[in-house]
Amino acid sequence: MSEMEHKDQWASLRTEIVESQKARIDLLKYKLLAVAALGAFGLGAGHGDASSMSSMYIYSFCFIPFVCVYIDLLCFHNTLRILVIGKYLQSACADPYERFISEHLDTFHQRRKGFFFEMEDWALQWSSVALSIILALFGILDRIFWHILPLNEDRIFWLVGNAGIILSVIACIAYKNRVRVLRNCVDRCRVLDEKPGRNRQKEVS
Image 1 (spheres, rainbow, N blue to C red):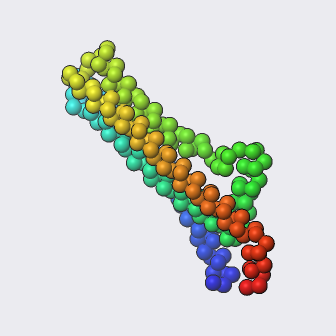
Image 2 (cartoon, rainbow, N blue to C red):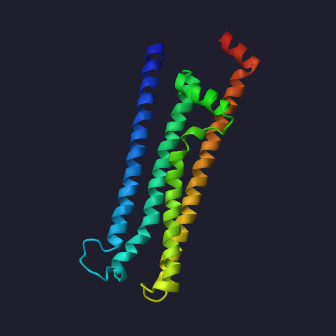
Image 3 (spheres, rainbow, N blue to C red):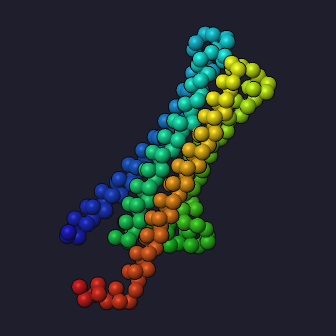
């Protein structure tokens, strides 16, 4: 490929990063809207029934953990795409922004890589865990104090809440493992490129 073709490819990849970031933000909005919609439906909003908390609508709460995990997985996938493209641009064209993040910010503050962009991940992951915990607690508190649900059906909320916690943790671990593999691969390639013998081969070729 010519130098102009390489530049066009790098520009298109940079555009793809921006579009993936926009899609990630949209997914976070959809997560909030989906949780709000399911919560409102579960509380019986718009049904005109004062006893709707004891009706079938309350079981829509059980969909919340699975919707959260589904959106989390899509966000993780978008983040991995952004990281892969960013690492490629850093190594292929020595992109100044990617090099600044990788070689200066994280190194200067002696933090783990990606330290400055973790807050959004925290909001994504811990919101799902927190909602699942609330759902499990609802099942426990209903059995002890409230008695809103029919006998033994409070177990459904406890089980679904715990399932949401487990799935959220599994999704988070799978995401972090893939990020670790990506960074190890990039570090290994950098070490190979810095070997004198390999550099001499590049110069000869």
